[in-house]
Length: 104
Image 1 (cartoon, rainbow, N blue to C red):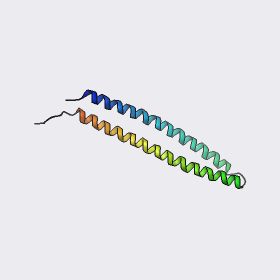
Image 2: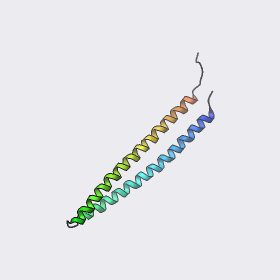
Image 3: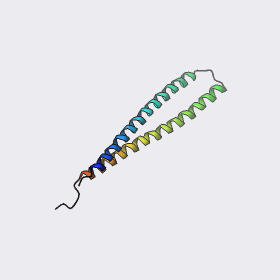
Image 4: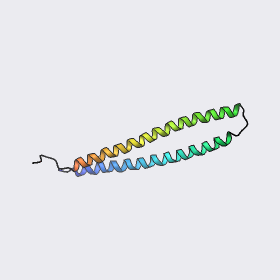
């Protein structure tokens, strides 16, 4: 017997995960655009005459980009995990929709 309530619950979970993933992807796209803008500004500043302030600034920017890149990779992993969860739920729905009981 197919459990309609369970299927509806699982489909709601898929919808929620899809919405979450869309928000996460939007955030990632904005963060990557910001990263590109900052890189462009840093490249323009690289034309400054050398000095300790420039070196300190560029060093800070390198640290910033390393940290930002690590965080973006982490969010991309979360996005992948969301997709995996959706696949698992879809499998659960498929299993729930199968006829149960002995097959003769």
